[in-house]
Image (cartoon, rainbow, N blue to C red):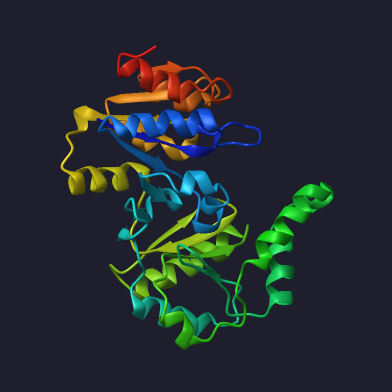
Length: 279
């Protein structure tokens, strides 16, 4: 069997340590019995390695909501990279734009740090930074970016997607249309009201998990999926054996075939043990 689970809000606890000994030991026991475990998450490299024990688990990882698939030794099996001509063109035409060029383990910015920070802050509502902890958290995130990146350095990287934080719908629509005309069949533009994302093709957790199942030659009937948020919905719809934790959103519960205990009470672990016929 293959057990694929979202991390934040689903498998992980809402308090520290999020990945405690009970979760780790239970998953290792499941793996030792010959089953596959897959972490399916929106997290990137830096966010994953924060949980060292989680990162060290002998399991597969689908990161960035399906953009990257890693094997048990953390080699890349699949990566949804942008065409180099698109990356080169974006740099040449928009080098002074506050784009974030995202790889699995880095965020690259062509403008200087102060310019990017000013733009980044202006992209949020005025009261967003009233919370000092949130402000400190975002400051730490911005420190992870690499600034003043050259075109040569950019093209030496496999860029998964490019993001522009911007709440101007008309601007992002106009930019998207121009990119579609310039690079037909080479990119996809997605806008969620807060940011424009430019990627090779639309990927999500469901598509990535299907790719991994084909890679491992595992039938869908043997796949069990667990989630809590909107980015889990396609995965829960795609696979028959779908489970939403009790703390999941209403929309997620509507599409899941089963509702289990919340993540505070180890709902995923208990459900898997029940599936395997254990107490």
